[in-house]
Image (cartoon, rainbow, N blue to C red; front, side, top):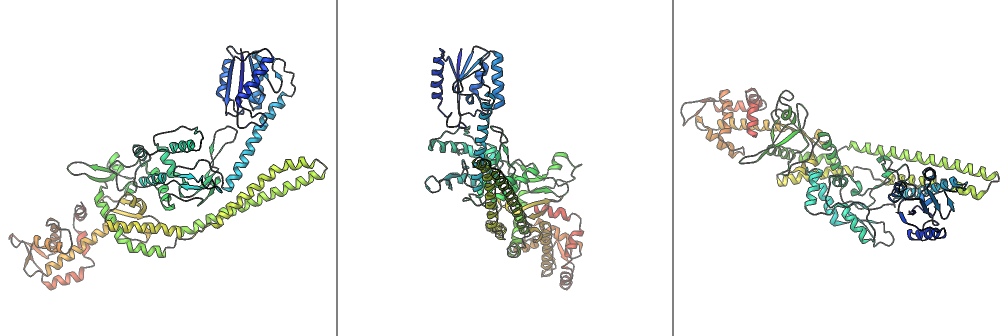
Length: 635
């Protein structure tokens, strides 16, 4: 049986770059002249000859063991452009007793009188390697110029209407809406999978669906798989892609061999152009999302439930350092609280206390904290030293120095190259051949120098001052004003403002703000609550002193404290009455109408208030069960 093999690839030269049908016609004429007829065709369209992993060629090799006796191809480069593999294939055919006929090269394996067959196969390989090298050089040069970009990411489009610059990148507002939504949902505490499910349920087209639609409009074929469902990876790629803040990043992947596997290029070796196009996401939001990602990896965070939690991965146990996990108490009313993960999973032996804190109470503590530090933050924004600024400037100077050194190295290489070139010409050798030999290397070096100069200019044009950091703090201040205005807080607010909250064994939180502001804003909810208790004690003493009767009652004191703005509860005033009894201010009687007789005179009470106002909290702390009372007051 006679088989015809045809292959077409974009790596072919103009001589061999003819259609599949033309190859078949040429082979049919050649076979007819030899009195043969092609019984079966094998073809590979659009596949490089350097790779021997071709479906058509693979099927041909399998059928050699069956009924194929003769193979006819247009030229040896159709069989392949890998020198060693082609020669091994020819040897294998001869050992099997199979015949290969090559039309253009007039080659027959049964006669094999071509002494330069090895040179031909070497040339075929050299051609594809040279072509690949030239393509890589062109791509590299365009990357350095910042002009090369294939498909733009989800959320952007090419400006096909711009005749002068069709590579201009514009925002696709419909897609950009969902890009912003992905970032917003992530900051609210949702994980990759939950966001993907939400987008799929809403019928939002996936990035591959969008690229396929673009290809159809442009009359092209989209060759990659098309997914109609969002995946974790799609969401992750969007959140990690700094293209959305205006950065054009090129040379992100490379391969060491032709048709080899792509490898990711380290970020420091990629070619980046900052503020190259309009941003969809602000720098502050992008940086915040990256920091949340890192924190979630460290704490093994797996995203919030459908109901959502205000505090996700910022709550920690003050004793053992583990994360506090949310638990939803169900029943007549739902109430969420957080407890130490170590206590919950391993028990008291590993962490002695639950460190339980209710979400609603923690929200109140955070709001109190925010109101407390509002004016302090405003002052810090005006006077902050911005220590991180010097680090950023130093990093840029180091990068500039590295680029300048690289330019000098390339210039020395160019100088050495020109010196060798002049020496070879002076020997009387063919100047045209020498110029051709050196031209490619010289062009590569000049391209690299130009690329480094562009990067250096980019760094020189970068305006590094306090503006960016100032914007971050201003954004935080805006969040604070919004919280004060709405008197509530959500997950996004927490992610923007709070770095860490540690909860002690009694359930009292200590808060650490972002941007290093906690060192300037001194506040502790436990201390603030103690201060409030102190104020209530003083207020109670004053009410007793100003009493016109010789006695007082819990009902009276509770009503008066409520008028002063303290929480209304007859029961909550009893601990303060106990303190008064313990200090000899009041005495319990058996008369229900006159339950507490006043033991001290107005003068004695005034002296007590004036003399002990700064140490009054010591009364409270000295009594047993004070922390329990404070906790009960919160709960």
